[in-house]
Length: 119
Image (cartoon, rainbow, N blue to C red; front, top):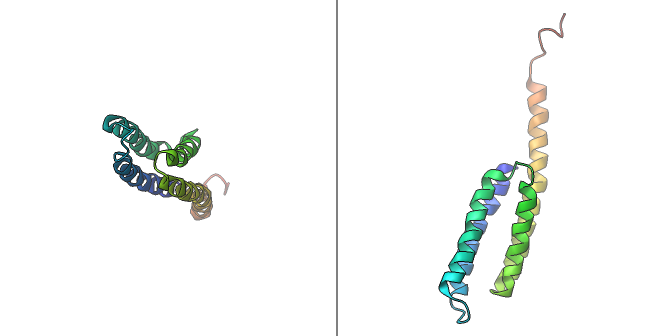
């Protein structure tokens, strides 16, 4: 799960950066505001890559997806991209868990029987 979710989050870092460049063209927003918000969001994406498998990591990822969709209020294209990345996040979590379960099953099958089980 960690690999799939981290790949999605790193993709979001680039999308947020490009959305920041688009948002800079809005005359109502200051450049410092745009890059503070974008920088915090990009940092959260990278930090979440290491926290995905910890308790609450997936929930934080969902909160980030909601924030990404809400950023469409500033950059309208982000509504579409936010929904797209939310779908990717769901797929990463869903299929990542299935892959982790399959790996655990195969690892359990590959383990040799314990020595005390024979006695």
